[in-house]
Image (cartoon, rainbow over all chains, first blue to last red; front, side, top):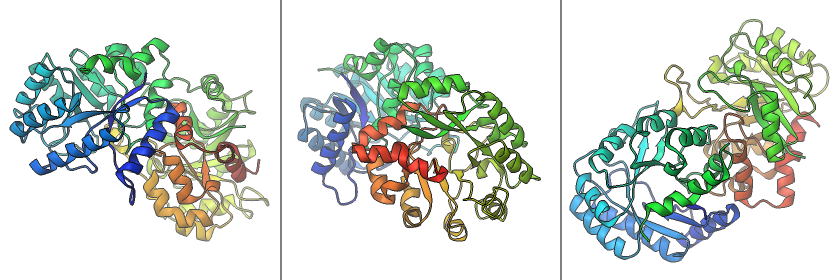
Length: 250
Length: 259
């Protein structure tokens, strides 16, 4: 069972949502990816207002509705709108969503994320948080792994999926290796050899989950990090789906 | 027959890479069904003395020349590059690799046409067709560079070069879809091939074929810096036909080298 924890459904110019879903499913089928977690909307908005948050979650919900056996929804929440975020998390959890997505509107150790994380703990939802450490410089509100480390220490009952493993994965993996409720994903940077082997060595195969960051990224390039790694097949099965199943409520 | 047009051997200074010697790369090739890889030297990216990097590369693949075809690193902005080129061609190296951003020049600098002239029929390479050239747009995502080595991507100002050297074969490595789209018209008219090592997006190889034409797309993995299998999975993801697979894996790559 291969599950991709990190997909954003975007349309190409002139393409409908239905066509984009069909293209995405076609590629997942070719690569043996059974399910994908969908979050955010049809475009990337760094500072979404309340209306945009609602609209992007509805986009994700309508995407999931087109293939409910293949897609899993993650609620897009924002520390800038904690009350609205709590409302959205409860609403979409009732509609079957199984995780929470936090992106780049604030550094993730922002106090506005505390009530969101408290609700995540109550509902048993994993939190997928964007992280990057860019040699070229982050956006002012773009979290580095150290910000997620601070948040994860404040909320030890929440499992945090560290998106992109911090981008600079050698730095990111080392920084969070001692924090057991941080689980890096595999996606969002080039398929640099050695990533998966290092993650397994530092964190263990139980603390890494497959994600692609499709549809901006290729499913294939990110899947290649796991399939091509020099690790036992049993470890690959955990990373490709087993671990994520254990993080999400049914 | 499958050809990987974008591989390296040797030592990368910022990370220990597995499979970076001849035996290791051959193991990867066997795992992924690759018959032949075109290889350059990691050291060539950083050495001032590219000739030494080329000699070390040749020594490292000795006995495996049937499957590992060496490409020479040349820095046309460095003094006496002509002797490096002569030595490489005399040793039978298959083509020339350029890393303009690591070697401190731009594609529109005067040294580039000087090199291309030397590669042509009246130059060092002799009376037949020009020696093929690979140009590396990006070796590493600039966001992931080591803090001592922040190298911008190469500005791919290809059009003047293609106009001035219409017979020259160019292999563009490490380009993404935006560059393919920007250069599409020029690529379709020239002897230009793009590798898929840094191509991203769902079904991206299909989109690349639609953008630049099937005959301009080649398999290149950027192994062992990248996982070799990532490029092969991109072909699966794109759902290529047998004819398209044959073109991308072999037929197109055979043209710049006249295999």
